Amino acid sequence: MHIYFYTKPDCTLCDEGQSRAEMAVEETGASMTVRSIEDREEWLERYHLSVPVVTDTEGNVLQEGMVFYGELLAQLKER
View (cartoon, rainbow, N blue to C red):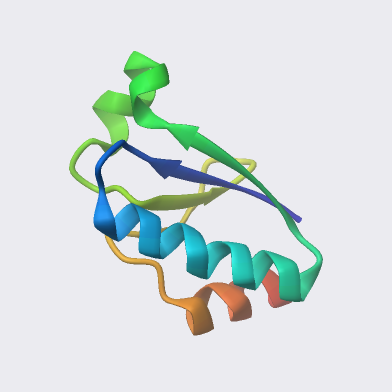
């Protein structure tokens, strides 16, 4: 499974969430692309109040606002 991790600069929650997401990805063998919401206007409009955000490749939000390792791990394992 592949996930996208949406972040923005100077975001402590994003940094912490990215670390948790990286651990879950590593444990499950999934892959992850990190995207800055500042790179595209569409991402900025959609996620500016919600980062960090984790989505699947279809755009379904798996986690937002805070990334919880256990929940994300379970979500990755079930897919």
